[in-house]
Image (cartoon, rainbow, N blue to C red; front, side):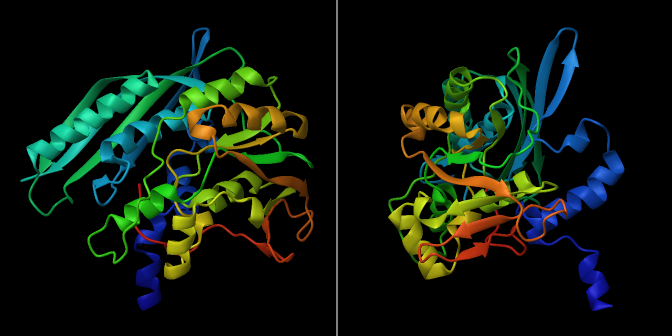
Length: 348
């Protein structure tokens, strides 16, 4: 009976972006709501109206604490929604914002968060044009939850389909991994360590627009911002139902010393820690150096690097289930699977 009860209950691990999140989406939401647009499982829904194509996305933000080094829940909400539209190759235009506020929440804090949202929206060149407010009894919500939705428009030929990975494609990331997750973790009152690390939370549409302008159409296979579940989960999503593996090199992974140190002390793996201001791109080998150069010339991509490449499937060839491998600094190789359990809750 105990096992059955666990199977019929939602756990925190269902919200970490890993294996259980994907199972929940496939087994419940896709089976219930499934349609040709939703079934693409992209960061945004692509649809047409008249002669124009649009990308629509939505997300909820429940980070704890609400204020952290480098940002707050407002910065996070606007950046995350802008980025989900941008990685689809579209230009973000308008956002909505819905607030679920706990009775007794500080009006000063709410004003500060709203100001952060407006400032971040201004940096991204978008407008918050509609929204909703709900107040619930004390104890019914932890301070403040925010849900944002966004819509963007396709510039001709820019919306990125789910491209088919090919042998030799390069994997490029715009900068250091794990900054956001560790910054949030160390901001918690019960965490015994302090650090100068700041969240990487930022809207990426300017960087992504520069990349798309610099490369020929069709040379980018996939683009994603590695948020919940970290880089490891995003790469596993790339190879899912694919006949291609991805190999990344440990010595090439950009990780700040502060992130490394805290991960070593806590047992966390930077590959699975959330980022909120990074983009990972898989592109044709001939295009990779162009993308890397564009990233490095942008303030949000100065630490960009090529971290690996795609290759024909080895173990499991023919199963249609590609894998992600990490080539270690000592010359070994291990499988990097999608996150199964829960690293730590409420990072985004």
